Image (cartoon, rainbow, N blue to C red; front, side, top):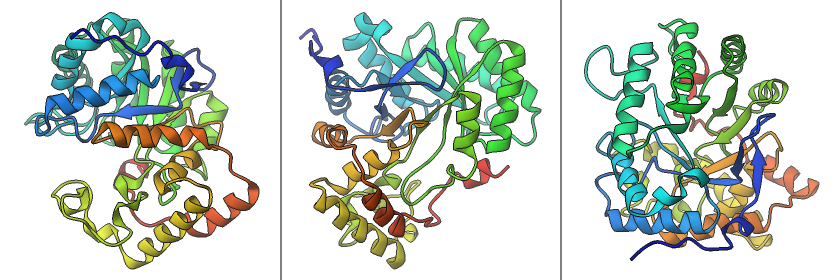
Length: 341
């Protein structure tokens, strides 16, 4: 059956300008870090991606090593492009990244020009695309000159293989430095993608100020703290949850102190007539310097529930003050090492 997207899709979503750049992103974007690899049914991924576009989610965020196995999320997205989304390519913002480990040897990780540009070519091949809209340096490489890493992003844009350059998990100081290098090259830094949630607030002291001053957009990932800011773990770790499987989310992160914070935040959400996840997403969007917040989804129902956060973005000063009592650092930032370099 030929896919026909919802005619009212752009009435269902709000869009925010990416810093001082021309590109706008949906307030909520779909990330394919989890649940879209080769270990999941393609039919489920297809239903989620279709529904996301129907809801006005025009931005799909990937990376070379999303899966598992590595590369399979891009391969699956390429299949969905071919089956459903190819006629709407000019309505989509598709991003990918390189910087973490992808293939063996010294040229399959970090930030060398060789790795980044080879990886981008591979990503384009897996997705069946001529270009991506945003190509990111996935993390800062302390062993490679920043001029080389940013030069690779500049080259990707000049070669027409990416429209915009982005970085992820860079410190405030390195972000300012990267922006200056790219500005001198004539390829502005469009966007930064940091982790951010009510339990991981590292971007507030410095990074958001740098992004505002430089006119760089900000799209936050892991706004639900890998599922911790949902009702899933209020009573412990359920079987089949992400914390119960091998992967990036260790059950050690769910300390009693952190669970007490989560339960208190859940009570605030309930008084507002929201789920904890909806409150957590709305909270990330309270700052105008945040362009978009990235959500994953394992089902259409979960996707729809997350997008419903946009129905209640208002947060009073009293609510924000109460949230601040519990929304404190909880030692869950798995990407802290990169952003501290």
